[in-house]
Image (cartoon, rainbow, N blue to C red):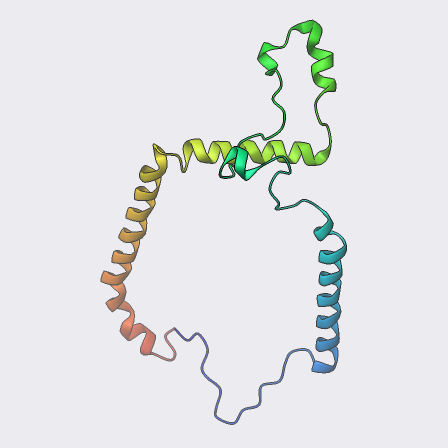
Length: 153
């Protein structure tokens, strides 16, 4: 659907910002992005698998599984052992982020894409999409004449 009238033939459309300014600025922004990726993001572990995961030992990678050495659960720790248990925890920002993302993936697997809820959620959204699309298809003929008018207000 065309919101604007097409320009007359042989009309020269000029850019909003002259090319003499726009091209060098866009190249500078691109170079800064490449520098940031190569020097900062590439040296982090963002988006990589856990280092402790071994395909031969653990099988396919599960985002919600902790691949480190297993420790006593918090609910099984006695009060006297609590300071030692806290001292064994990794307290870096990346450890907090990884734990948060493991819980996000765990909840996603349990409630949104697991074996029980997988079909239910998908079927509900597919019905909503099919209902919306069929409604649009059935009612679209009402707008054909409306779209043909140039000035409709």
